Length: 297
Image (cartoon, rainbow, N blue to C red; front, side, top):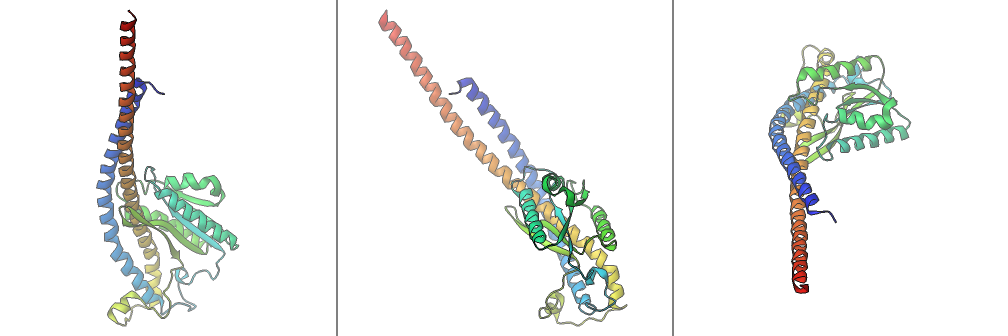
């Protein structure tokens, strides 16, 4: 059984830990509000951009002159996964859930006879995946998700590299793996195909057309417009996904630090109770020794 001195030292250590986790919870809550505002502000633009592209693509899909980012390479052999995690830990299961989902998808693709390549965004994903997937990593981007505010120019670096690899025939399908923000305590693991641009089933139509019932005419032709918009749409989708990921990270960290703070409080209560019991037992023992000595005299 530990001595009273050891128990006091442990209680002091847990109190200091509780102060740290409580402060981290407050900081994460402040960052969450800012990240959530950014993520929610980016959603309408990304959704409208996707709807416009789908409307445009319906007229050129399957034609010989269709842009490569829309038509694809005609193969489904090489899959590129972009795994977006955080640069820091102490955010519960945020990073591990993304890495588990990526590993599961890798195994599914390998089981289907596909070749898999990885682009990693975030230090935690790199540290976890390079243990068993080192040979599949083709690129790592650092210093983007750990910034106070993710900028569009940072995402452009990833976008340029994706386009370069695609033009060189390095992959056929590109999928982004990240956590979509739902609430401070809930994130949705998302697999979003970026290349080739996915089209809705023919019977569904596009969201824009479904809402307004309008038929659009484009000038210049759809092929030229798509040639300009498709690379830009890729960057927009990446930017929105990383903002969603950043908001999810702060929400997960706030929840994890709140749980850690409550657990530290419970531990302090248990240690205090145990300390008081042991102290009372020691006092009783000393009193009995004094009384026994007095009676012996």
